[in-house]
Amino acid sequence: MLSVRDAEATILNSVKPLDNQLDVEFVDLLMANNRILATPVTSSFNFPHWDNSAMDGYAVRYADVQQARSDRPVVLEVVEEIPAGYQPQMTLKSGQAARIFTGGIMPNGADTVVMQEKTHRQDNQVLIFIPPQPQEYVRHQGDFYQAGTELLPGGMTLTPAEIAILAAACREQVGVFRRPKVAIFSCGNELVMPEQLLKPGQIVDSNQFALATLMRELEAEVLLLGIVKDDPATLKEIINYAIANADIVISTGGVSVGDYDYIGRTLQSLGGKIHFQSVQMRPGKPLTFATFPTCLYFGLPGNPVSALVTCWRFVKPAIKKLAGLSQGWGGNFLKVRSHSQLQSHGKMETYICGNLHLFNGVYQFHQSPGNQSSGNLINLSQTQALAILPVGQTLVSPGEEVVVLQP
Ligand code: AMP
Ligand code: MG
Image 1: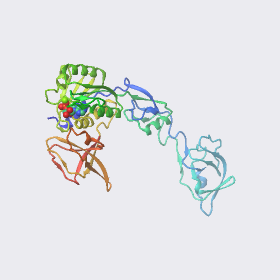
Image 2: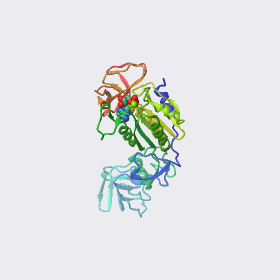
Image 3: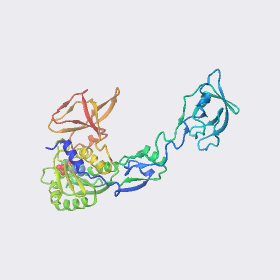
Image 4: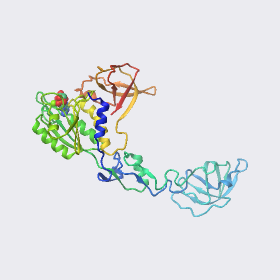
């Protein structure tokens, strides 16, 4: 059976990222959070734009004040006042200083700022008691960024910091990759919507809610196709529509070996290339992955824990790569200590739901208290981490290290 690692590699190798010319849209900066920058951004501005003061104080010539002493202060004439936003008019000559405030442009002739707290003002004179360091408290033009070089690389996720940087570079809009289109449907004769009255044997299709929410969290555009019966003809019609209208199709259910599991056969009849139909993983073994010329297909197992865990483990990295993210597609894997005793039968890579708690500066994994059945949706609540027991490992004792995936 295919290992989790090989399944992930197969999936990621099949992903063709969106095109950074054709698949781009321009959005206002305030709409750009969590979107992925399509192409590198450069600026014609230096940061800082000009030499300016990092303190409230006095702009001086270092040579004038280097001999200052507490018992023999240097006395300078204050010839100008430079608040932020003001262009200095004077060139400082020897013996002169300018009152300056944080962000104020350094006047010509000055090279150093003496902070206000180390001076004493008397009318139009200032007394300096302690010699500053040369160039102290001056933020020089281009110290933070030089005009014309790369300001932000393409393929990065925009966060409040990058949005501020773009604003500072006078951008009003930014070119980001369009949202990947993800079609989602659920397969099963027993499934109904939450508003429907449950008849014996029926359950609510919770998977479409989990998956649509997760996909929206990933900034995908969701095409929700609802519930489909375990019927080959209907399935064929829906899958045919989905692969023509989405970059990624996710279905749940119908991928096991039961008599009503039609997904594999339908994908084949539509000419899909089936890469695998099971993975050495628990929960999630009957995961199906197929490709069509312009679309990836994930047939996730119907059990709610299996569906979400396989989506976190495999679909999420695929979406990130497809969406144009240049690196970091896999989730966050951390090594932590287990507080709980964790068990597996050792034949599959096993994923156990739980939480992380900080204890004495070290993160500890606490297994969720409920039944770890792949059908137990309730136990998924507030899952912050999935402990991973590799194939061959049957036990992690309390206090031992374990790798967790943060979904
Ligand atoms: P299947 O993968 O179709 O064999 O389904 C496995 C189990 O998951 C069955 O108990 C189904 O009733 C349940 N299941 C299938 N699809 C869903 C769904 N969309 N929402 C919640 N449970 C489901
Ligand atoms: Mg089923």
